[in-house]
Length: 305
Picture 1 (cartoon, one colour):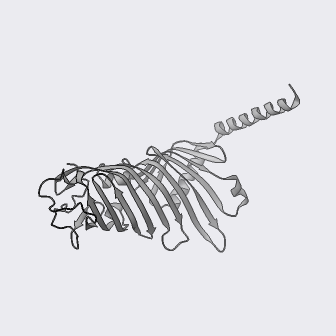
Picture 2 (cartoon, helix red, strand yellow):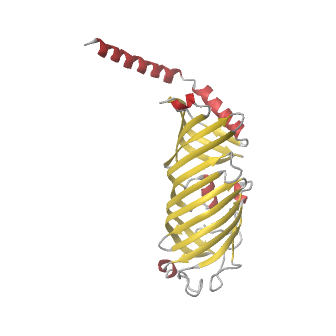
Picture 3 (cartoon, helix red, strand yellow):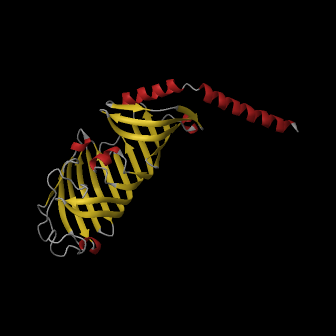
């Protein structure tokens, strides 16, 4: 065995030994407590719980069994979160972090950039969402009474320096389904093959620029504004909805619920008002050819049959 091979073997052994000592001697509790402290300081009113904290390659930290709560209610759960520090950031005036989160059968990957200088201070971030199941997402589960399912994909960009549209989302929801009931009339399970959403968050308003629904039973489009309130379930809705029922939907509709031909090119329109917890339908200015039952106030759209 030549000298070069011996040096290589000793180098590998040394590297593995250092890694083992780092794992064994890693100050798990101190690091975890430091992260929890800074998180709760940055986001007042929220609490963070986490399992073990372990080092990961390269220059990264991995947290497991993460729970984020607010006012005693669960807001988010994640199987793990990996936070990395790019080597190139060592030579940059800005601090950057790479994030990977595993939650709800999918992943969220992205980066966060912290700019701190005399002329410019702020935070920017971009995230890619892949195959996240919304069925058990706490806020969605509560709003839909556990009846809304589907898989979320897309991108989210955030820039605190922008006075308007600080966060922009381009999302796609695949295989979305939920049982629909209006005025205690069972309309069956509605399935959308794809829902495409373009939205922007400005201060306390979530603007739905475009939301296109595609399915065998219904096609449609939604736009409008959601005014974010505390608690979130009290957020106010002001949405315009256009629906194009397809033949598969109309032929299974109870007699007398809707009259006339609504499967035309333009469909019919109505407004959704109220709150997330208690949505209501307003037919004022509706393009529907005849009156239709609307959900009783507070009944909502996701009531199980």
